[in-house]
Length: 258
Image (cartoon, rainbow, N blue to C red; front, side, top):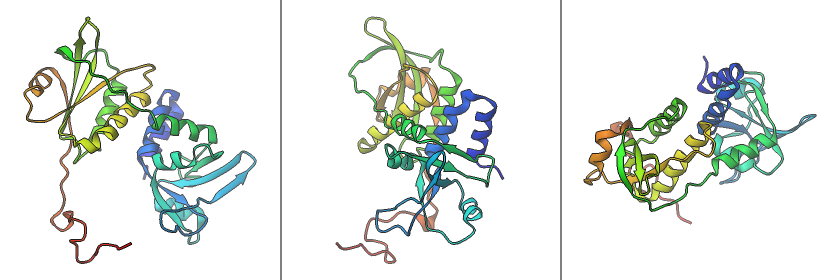
């Protein structure tokens, strides 16, 4: 059974313009990294394989694929591709993905890992410009719309909805703005960075997409609703047995004392 990474890799092999989409999927995916020894606390040392092409850490997008590769009990840790890239950046270590066990088998040289970490570290800029007019969005590539849809679909519990509009600023400068609804203040920086990633991975050079955060009860939201392209964000639903408890309130998991 093909995984989303397999599918993205296949598209990349057929069409090189899909490579950014593949690396976006890689960054968002939960991956299994082979370790040199069992992780201790928050420390995990990846097992490094030295080859004629350089040093590589090994990652897999499914546990059974990792098991097929090593064939013996082996320590590993589950981490996002984003975190793995940031951890290995600058270390001169590449990544071997699903080697010999999937169609997405490939080697990523250290330069690619460094590039991915740099892209994922892109920061959004804060401005105070106020739009004078809102209008329907026009001229944005479908790749960006699709990337935004994917990013927002994974923000359940953080964003209730989002509206993409065209804007005209003072001086007749035009652009686009994404209004994010009911995002808690502590999460806003991370959400803005995720949107910046969507822009970069869409392949839009020197592109710009302004982001604003609005309360769902504010009157300003009506203008966005009337002309904007709405992105629906799935509700975060917990089964009755999995409803989160406040720290220390679960009798099966007492608080850890330090």
